Structures are given as C-alpha cells and as structure tokens.
Length: 336
Ligand SMILES: Cc1cc2nc3c(=O)[nH]c(=O)nc-3n(C[C@H](O)[C@H](O)[C@H](O)COP(=O)(O)O)c2cc1C
Image (cartoon, rainbow, N blue to C red; front, side, top):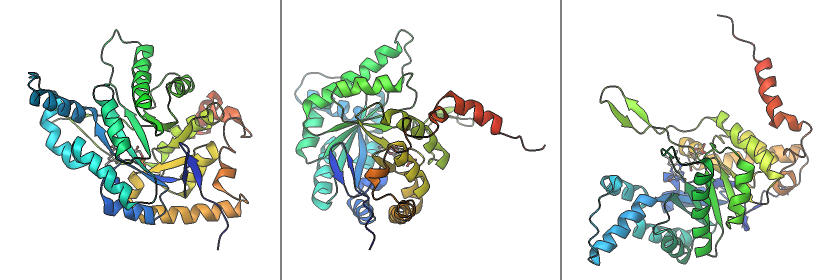
C-alpha cells in the first residue's frame, strides 16, 4: 500500500486528489460524474450556466409580471439546445442538488458570461442548492474601439465582486490567456474577493464555412502541447499570488499533470482527455503520478507543489524571454 499523499487544497476545499473534472458534458450527468469520482477525481465542475440563459429567464419573468419586456435576444433561438446541455437555469439548480446528493467530492457550479444581470440571484440560488464553490467563466469579446484594456478588466472585476459579495462559498475565475498583465489581474480579482484563478479558458474560435458562407462554431478537443501556456503562468503566479491556481488546457497524462503541479498548480483540470479515454483516464493518470512521485522521493502532492515555480526552479529565465530565444535557437529545420 502506497503512502504517497495525493490530496491537495483548492479554494480552501480539501480534495482527495489534484485531478479535477473540468466543465464538460461528462460532468453534466450524475452517472458519469459518479464514474469520475470512482476514478479518483478530487472535485467536479458542472457545465456552465450561460448569461444568455439567465437573461432569457429574467425577461420571461418580467413578461410574466407584465412589465412589457418585448426585447428578443440573438441567443433566444439557442435556448432549447442550451437547455439540453446544462438543463437551463431552473434545471441547473436541481442538477447541483442531485450532484451534491450523489457525490462525496466537492461540486463546483459554473457561471459563464460578462453581464451582471441576474448573477447575484443565481449565485445565491446555486449556493443554496449546495454547490461547494462557483467558477466564473468570464468571456467577453470587446469589439468597441473605445473600450480600453483597463475598462475590460474593470468589467471582469466588477463581475467577480458582484458574485463574491452575494455568496459565502469560494469563487474562482476562469479567464482566457489574452491578458496583457496576468499578475496584476490576479491581484485585482483577489481584491474583488476571488479565491482562485483557473488558467486558461479556451476560447472556441469561430470558423467560416466556405460552402454555406456562414460563421460556424468549431469545437476541437485540446492537444497536449497546450498545457505549456498555463505551465508558464502558473509558475509565475505561484510565487506572486496567494490565489488557488487551477491549470486547464492540454493535460493529457501523468507527465502533464506532474509538471503543472511542480509549476505550482493546486489542481489540474481535465476535460478533453477524459472525454477521449473515458473516466478511467483519471485513475490511470493517478497511478502513473503516484509511481513518479515515489520514484522521485516526494512524500506528497503538497510537498512537490511549486517546487519548480519561477522562484524555485534552477533557471527562472526559462520562464521569461530567454525561453523564446533558446527555443528558436534549438530549432533545426527539417531538410526539404
Ligand atoms: C465538449 C466540451 C464542453 C465544454 N463545456 C464547458 C463549459 O460549459 N464551461 C466551461 O467553463 N468550460 C467548458 N469546456 C472547457 C473545459 O472545461 C476545459 O477548460 C478545456 O476543454 C481545456 O481543458 P482540456 O484540455 O482538458 O480539454 C468544455 C470543453 C469541452 C471539450
């Protein structure tokens, strides 16, 4: 029996393992969530409830109360499909309750959007339904040329403050990698009450269909090399911020997860690999991680956490500009 301790702390929650099942269809059904728990997931993050669904519901409520809300949002047409993905606002609360009743591990709810409308009420309802934490997935596409980077960051922090002031449970923030100053941003959301940062949200970039001449969505699963972007920023943030740090994007095996923890991640989130290989991906990965940890004479995940972050690694410049130059120099072009 191995004595290696795989437990970790994330958002103040004690988790049995550092692998967290990230928001995806796998975490939206009780039976697959149970399989993820059996395979060793430390926690699960439910599929997101979208701002558009909350706004739609608020409009419906206004209409019911005869406030004459006539507006029709672009997203209204997608409501039935979104409902099938995450059960819709009312169903979402029942999903939180059912997951909480079925699972031993923490259940994190996820809110996705940028507007503040309805979020306070929904965050409170989600908390009452039993969620252990809320992950805010902030997605904003700033097309207005008068909006500065600071304006956009302020929108983010106002959103975070709205939710953190509404609930007692911890709130984490999932953002994309296109921030000019991630370390400063981490300080701002910490001040707004956030307990953690999830790096990085994958923006599902649109495509153009050349036949239908339409803008179409294109969801592709991640590739392992994507984990190197969160790796760098987790290594940098881990010695500069007391926020809990979750890595998401490109963790496809034990090696990826170990590197992210060495860089300072409190948890490593997995979606694509669990979808590709099924929930047993988590148990296989944990077995391999345990073997590596033992062979390298660490006692626990907590002990190894951050031991290769920007401050502790032997070559800090490797996380900075020097890496760029070295990477270019190390590339030898294949013969034509
Ligand atoms: C099919 C699918 C559905 C997803 N749904 C959500 C979602 O509802 N909310 C969210 O924040 N992230 C969602 N994600 C993103 C994942 O949670 C994760 O952050 C991303 O896929 C990167 O991690 P990975 O490399 O392990 O897949 C989804 C990903 C996939 C593949």
